[in-house]
Length: 325
Ligand code: SF4
Image (tube, rainbow, N blue to C red; front, side):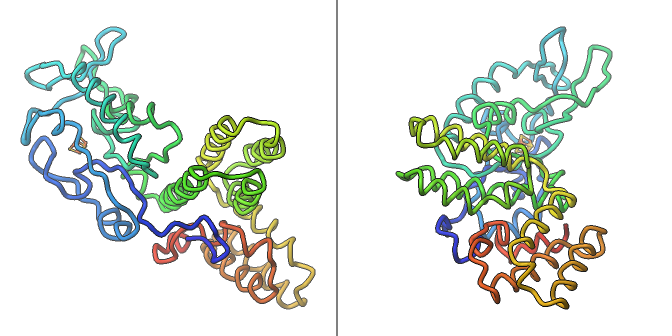
């Protein structure tokens, strides 16, 4: 998690919604599962899973007839592939109710099984009358969760195979937890300024325009009713974090961080840091290399502003996520 200066640290596991089959539950239409080892083993010590299989909870049973999304004129229906039995209304009602329930559980994220007509987040096949699929649909349940919890960090397990998307999503779930934990307590404008300041480099790595917009919101916080401030800050913060922290943005942030202590380094150390950042920019070393060197100097030189930056350790080091991006 974040540096020892992180007063928003919360050691309780993060509560994360998940498609049950990804944890190895045999709930798929054919009685199988889609066990994902990264989720069930590496990430598991840091999270409390909330598994949901919408098709089983709807009462379709296991094994069951597979279902699919079909286009009928303007409407998208959820139907059995052989019987044609229409589950659309039932699934929509179930999904809306279950999404409301999940909203009360203070989830910090959700990971869905890709391609499923119930759980897929994007590019789910929709079959037309001629029996041809188009990959532009969304699972009915995933859509209801996304609509009910628009700021929740949601990902598909397939995309989490990409190290950058994985690192970004995990950064977002920990950020979501810190944010909701902070906003759930009474806070003054000074507290918000401190929270925001600690996240500046992290936000900058994801979206510079939204980082600036958040800065303007915090600057006008005194004139705003607290409920409105809470809602607007939370929404903008999570929108900013949804931006991809690309290599180019990371280099920008590393240079920014360096600006806080560059002049205090001797020539050899300055040269070394610049070389390492350049190596990272060119893809020769992973992000953990410049981050580790910067953290070393921050500690030795006691650079207070940077020591408080969540950016330098946004998630548990045991996950080794920055060794692969
Ligand atoms: S993808 Fe969703 S509906 Fe299908 S088995 Fe997995 S949890 Fe159940």
